[in-house]
Length: 243
Image (cartoon, rainbow, N blue to C red; front, side, top):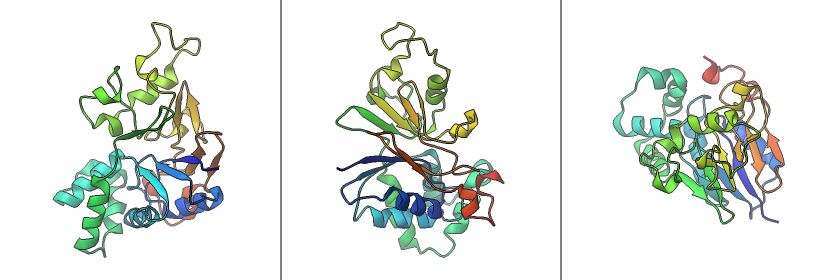
């Protein structure tokens, strides 16, 4: 049976991506939904995009836009950098492009341009990098950057009173529009978790691959999940975003 698999933030950890997809034993009919942040962290950011572009030719894939992908796109287009981006993974991304031709960079720009802000499937499950802010639903969002920058969505789910029911007046309206919402963006390691974690109807699949955690994949129907080794062990000479 075909599976729908959500993949957490990769952050240039191509070795971890290959390892976890091998552990998943991906079938040609499976749908892979990547939740964004393909870049910035480990040394293979550009190479990760190469891999995803090729994977998309043989596998059904949906690619969601992450905030780091937007940052890399700005650099590819303008050539400009800023200190904050450099210190949060940009340095390794720039280095990964050292021997890339302009033609190859153009392919990557097109790939990032085509990323989706979010995806909603036929079971009303939403897939987005960070979340959304408009209480009427994502289609009413005023600023698309919220889809890949907002931190309040996960914080809201984590801080929700567990006794509230979805039809209570105090229940956050943002959580009532979809059966489930799958996100990345904020590592669950910040709340001392190391596996895909559910809060209310929100599933966070970012298990800290950019830092000391693992890269995770979850079957959204069965909730079975798979993980790579801790990514820093696959890149023993590097610091990732721990620098």
